[in-house]
Length: 171
Image 1 (cartoon, rainbow, N blue to C red):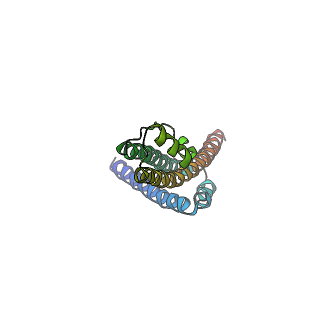
Image 2: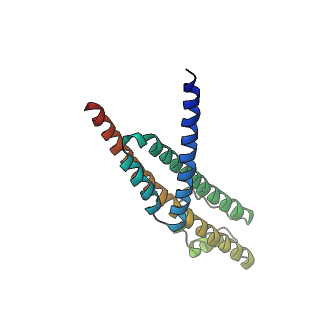
Image 3: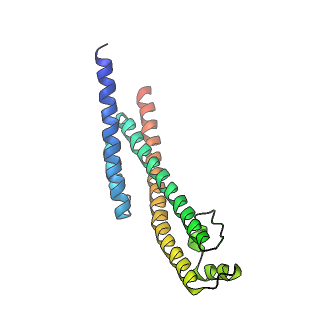
């Protein structure tokens, strides 16, 4: 009975370590714009066999957490852009993250003119806000797509290892 609490502590520490390692690798993937670093870790886990299922689940959980953070950041950038544009007197509904990259400077100028915003300083400031927001959203969008690809990759291997684990128990 004494070993049970110790096993629980070791299990927790192993999961925490795996999440930290996964976080570092995910940062490298995002910085380099590639899945290769995560693929290397997954290859090692797959070669270790079904006993690495829990570690792979931790990597997937960390990826999901990072993806949720990027989605929150996307929504925050859109909200902040709307707030800044509103402070210049421009009302725009930007609900969809895909709408902003499609919004051109011409579209923004047209919207400002339709709403009676004709001062060049205000128009220039709004165009700068659009430019800055589009850059941020472009980077966040790229990160979101990469994290989605990583998540799909991890789920595929998680299913493969689970399948292998089930069939090993049948033997």
